[in-house]
Image (cartoon, rainbow, N blue to C red; front, side):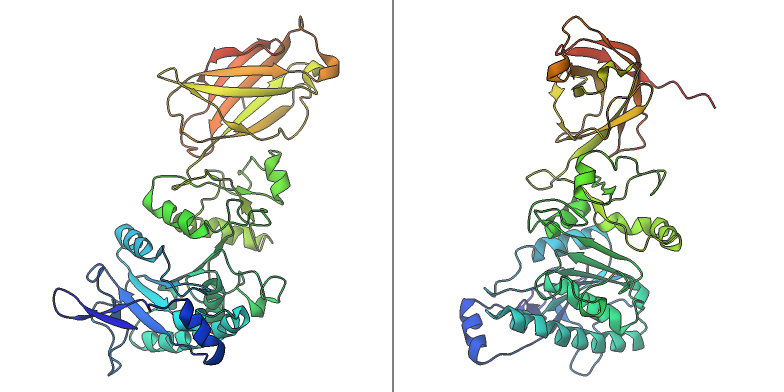
Length: 421
C-alpha cells in the first residue's frame, strides 16, 4: 500500500505497486493483504480507506447510495489493472455511487495460480466482515453491486453465498475457468449468489453466454457505460444455433427488445424473474462484436416470404444504401431454413456502422449450382427489414419482387402495411 498526498493535504491510497519480483518472493514467503479503497464523486482522484483506525466510516461514503465493489483477478506480474482508472471515471460519470476498489494484489501476485485460487476464499471472508460492519452503519445489501474480473468474479460469488444470495447484483467479467469450471455451485460463482447475476464470457470458442474476442469482457462492460451502443444479445441454446439465425426472435424473452449486455442489463431484472417463475433458471445469450473499442455492431433481421418453391435451396445476400448513397455491407448469418412457399425465413445481419436513414436495399439471389437457370424469375411475396439494435425504429417493407440469378437489384423500401387481424 502506498500513500500520496492530494492537493488538500489529505492522504490518498494508491493501488499496491508490485512487480514480477514480488511473484518470486511469494514462492518462499506467501503473503496476503487486502485494502479497501473508496472513491466517490467527492474524491475521484484521491482514494481513501473505507474505515478509519477508530472504525468510523469514511465521511464520503453515503450508505443510502448504491455501492459498486470492483474486484480484480489473478495478477502474476503484479501490475495495476490497466482498466482500473478508466473504469472508475466511467462509473462515476454514469451514476453518483460509492465505489470500493478491493486491492488484494498482494495475494494475487504469485506464480502459483492455485495459491491465488485459495486466497479468493480469504478475500471473501475479509470482505464479508467489512460488509457486516457497513450494515451496522445503515448500508443495504440490496444496494451492493459486485463487479468481479477473473478470480474476482468468484470472490464476489463467495461473498454472495455468505449473505445467502441477498446482494443486489453480481457481474462476473471473464470468470476464471481453471479450478472452477465444472465445480459444484458452492465452489464458484453461481446464479443464486445475488438477486441478479450477469456474466460476460469473452471465450474465443463461444462456449457460453457471450461470443467475442478473448479478454474483452471488462472493456465491453465499460463500453456499455461510456458509449451510446446498444449491445443487444440473443437468447439461444448454443452458438451454433445463433450463427444459423435460429435465435433471431426475442419476442419470447421480451416483446420490446432483445436483452442488453453490460451495465444496463439490470433493467431486464423483471423479465428474467418472470422466466425463472416459468422454469428458466438461467438465460444464455450470444453476440458478436467488432474488433476495436467500443466494439459496437448493429443487428438487422431480413424476413422474406417467397411465392413458390423454386427458391428452396438458393440463398439471398443483401446490402443497404444510406441517404448519401453509401453502401453498407453486412456480415450475413446463415438462414435458419430453406425457402418454402409462403413460409417466413429470417436472415440475421450484422453491420459495423449504423444505417439510420435507409434509402434502398440491394438484393442478389444465388441458386444452387445444379439448379441454375439464367432466364428464370424468382418471386418474393414480401420482405421486411427491421433493426434489432434499435427496435423502436419502424420496420421497412417491399412487396411483390421478381429476382434473377446473380443479378443485383436495388429497391426502395416503404413503411410496412399492417397485417390484417
